[in-house]
Structure formats: structure tokens, C-alpha cells
Length: 401
Image 1 (tube, rainbow, N blue to C red):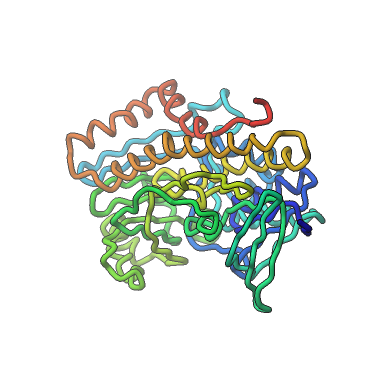
Image 2: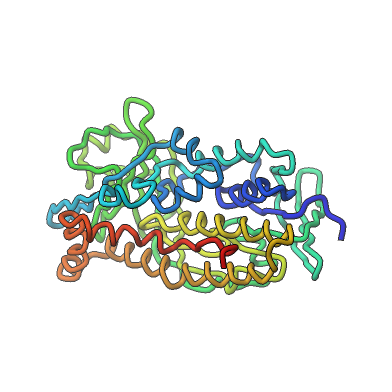
């Protein structure tokens, strides 16, 4: 089978671009196809846990990402019913890990950083306005039919990486299921500007309430007022197109009328939440990564965290297979380990996070659930152990097996 590239990557989000970059750095000829005409910047992921930063460093993009975003160490849980504030931070990790902080940076901004690096490689290209419409494969490779303004064309390669999101066309064409459940509520992610000098509000705050629960995290420090991500939950029966009209009520009940009136809405994105996993992360010469492989509600920021950990191990393993440094059976190991990491660790933790934050109507259970965070605030050793959870979501290099 003749081909112009060795790998086709479907999707130009952070996971797709990271896989393309890692492959390009290994000398692999890679083509990214993306149905949009440019990078997307709708409100989505924006917190990158400390454990993911080593992988960004290995791929050479961390320094630029840190310059574009900012480092963060503090967390707070605020309980609406009682007024309790529980504060803790990542300082407990100092001296034990290389990057004892999280990175706050909009997902679109991270994708832009990665794209700038990718564009320096002559063996990589990104085809915008190219939508995947069909995928077929045989033992030698894949054929990907894409539609652009000029019509349909077929791209061929030995391998295809599906990084095209939770609604993945690649996954569907590969005949893989997407098992799990969809939450009955809607999340609304917004980017808003409001004053930074609100006393007692950490740069990442979890506002605990079964009506006005919210995830509130600072994105950047530009302008007179900082840009913040404010994500809340509402009844999915309400019309999504009028979500912006309901936002002031949520802000007023959380921050007070003055802050609500002084808030500038920059962007808003309503979406459904899922806890789902593909039935396999490999189907022959098709490999899945990121949201195409698994989808989780965003409470705790584990969605893109898992996509980054997928990408770090996949691009290295696939490059080794292409160059004859590893048997392709290593890709089955990738598929198995990453699926297990999602189903056994990330998805249960994200579900527990959501129940704590947004479904806290039982005061006895809530008090029990919060006790671990109270202990983190006063016991650095215990805090370090709890904070190490995100590191357990990582799969070490498969080349060392």
C-alpha cells in the first residue's frame, strides 16, 4: 500500500498534536487531519496536574507552556451550607518531585504551543478543514477518506491515531463501542473576568453545594481582572442556548450581587458529561487516545490528564514499532494498560469528585468525605500521599518492559 505518511492523526487538539509532535521528533512522517479550520478555544480543560508536566518537558514544550500560563499550588474547598473553608496546597510535594505545582493554561493555548513546535518539522503537516468520513484497513495499513472544500480524497498510512474527541468518527469506523453512561445533568463551562481580590478564594476552588456547586479556577493574569474558569451544573432539560441568561443567578448566589454585576462573560460552552470508555483502545492498525478512547466528567481535571498520559506512552511506542525497535504487540500493552487506568482509577475518582461537589445533600456523608481534605490541610505527609494519586494514572515507558 503506497502512502505519503507513516501515521495519520485524526484531531488537532492537544492529544492529537502531542502524538504528532512525539512521532515527528522520532523522524516519523506524520499527517494531522482536522475538520475545523483552525485551533479551537472553547472553554474546556485548563489545569494540568503536576504529574503530567514531566511528559511535556520530555517533548520540549513545557518551558513555553509555563511562559504562556502560570504555576499554581493552592486549593480550597468551600462548603456553602456551613461556610467552612478547607485550604491545602502542593507545597507538600516540594523536595520529592521535580514539578511540585500545577500549570494553569487554557486548552487552546496549550494546543497553540504544541502546534508551534510541530510546525518546525518538515516531516509533519496539519491539514485543516479535513473531516474524516470513512476509515478502512487491512493488514498493511489504513485508508482514511477525508472531506474538504474540494471534495473527498483518500489518505493512506500504515497507522492511524484517533484523537478526534468523545464523538470520535475514527472509533465508530473501527467498530469499537463506547461503553458507560451519560450523566443526566449538563455542565456549563464559562470563561469570565471578575476581580481577583475576593478574600479567601484560592486559584482553584471547589464550591460544594447540591444547587450552586461550581469549579472555579484562574486561567491567566491578563487585564485589570483575571480570567477565570467558572464551571457549574444545571438541569439538562433547560435550553442550552439560553445558558448565558442563567449565569448571573449562579454568580450572584456564590459571590454576591456586586461581583455578578461586575463580571464579563468571555466564553461559554454547555456540554453533556460522560463516564465512558472504548471497548478497546486498539483495533488493528487504528489506535485511540484521549477523549476518543475515554470520556469523563471534568471534576478534578482528569480528562486531559488521562489524554496526556496516553499520548506520552503511545507516541514513543508507535515510533519504536515503525522503526523496528519494538514488536507491534507493545501496542496491545498500551491499549490494555491505558484502558485499565481509566476504568479502575480515573473514572471512579472523577465520579466521586462530582458526587462530592455537586450532590452533597447528605450532611453526614459530606462531613465524612471532607475529613480527608481537612487532614490534608494539617498533615503534609498525608497530603503528599493523597496528591500522588495523579502520578498513579501514568503508564511508564513501554520500551523498558
